[in-house]
Image 1: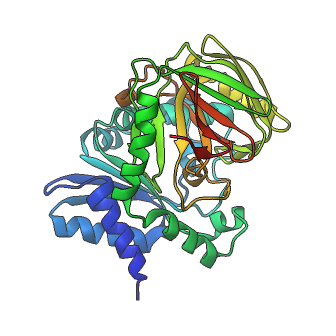
Image 2: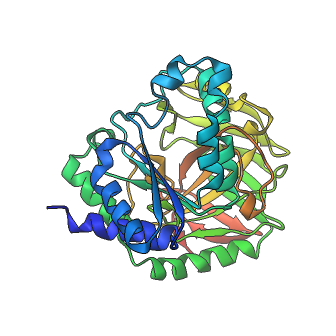
Length: 357
């Protein structure tokens, strides 16, 4: 018998996260490991009178095609795949990898080609031209990465996603209002003093939309505004199955002019050199989910940790005013709970993870 929390989760994704309407065509992507949630999502879509377009793969990043296809083929989606990405009305992706390090075996060239292939989908999602959500399903690989049993990890997921999202929306709206009214944000902490501009930009409140779990307020900073240094000393940065520990970025006029790391520095530099936009900020995010208190090596959760911020180098969200374009979007989390401050136009608004609004 299916866990009733899975049905509640599926209703949340279908009715709130993407608000599917009758007649819609809905892309559903995932692995067979997520079958219970995918089946529940399909049932919810069917009851509405919409059409699920299901695409399952053994690996969610890379896979045999990404490893073996000629680069010129890998860079372009198949014509039928392109049509799906261009024509569906909504996207639901269920993250359930068999191996938490999927994609780590791909060369930088192949990772870049894979990003180019999905550009047509990314353009629609980053502009919110079609509603989308990425959801987490509990699997052994991610539980092991988090240092949990599968039962513990399953409970952790449900505690993070099955919240009163209307109440969370109201709470996060107050946070967004403080930053919407400000032009300059300053982040201060050990080894960190970074300023950036939000002038003319508006924030988005992820109250159970876009990512599940939700629980963040995020912005697209003015592209040439970042000045100073930030050290991500608390947690490793994880991207394409690779871990980079102790990332330190120095910004001038919005551009990363120096990047170092305690380990994985070569990967960091190669990723930042993918294209012209990879060394600029695409996002400032503020973690607000009260159900997430610990680092999981899973950015979908980690960027929502209450009392953290995250910066993404690379592509920005156009629906929040962003103009930076890149093949990458790499979220890196900074923990401010032990010793950190956020200022909005010079006013202290958060200290050691606690709000002063």
